[in-house]
Length: 159
Image (tube, rainbow, N blue to C red; front, top):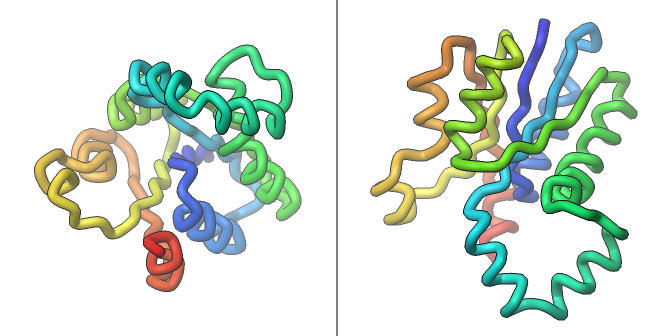
């Protein structure tokens, strides 16, 4: 069985996935997916927050692409945690519109289950634009599981 775990990098979803890991079977192949979005905005941020990004690059090390940096920052710590729990896991970073990239990965990887993290957010922008979770649930041709973090993690993240 193959399971795709989509991770957005947020602390609350990280905690939700870590909690769910305890209940996962050890005989399944897991893939963590992170999608880089809005590449054009990143270039603007690089100019505005140059000093902050230089500090991040110093912490992360010498990386020659945003995909490698995203993998190192967002996926590697969770992969390590999952491996420490005895799970077989790999990591994939894709670039583009989150829902489209997740759906493409599901089709190409022939996954049996897709696990998505979702923070309960009812902001105006989220209500106007269909969420990634909704789009994946409506269009995936496989089972979709949504992990919502505990309320205390959401409250901590909003402060």
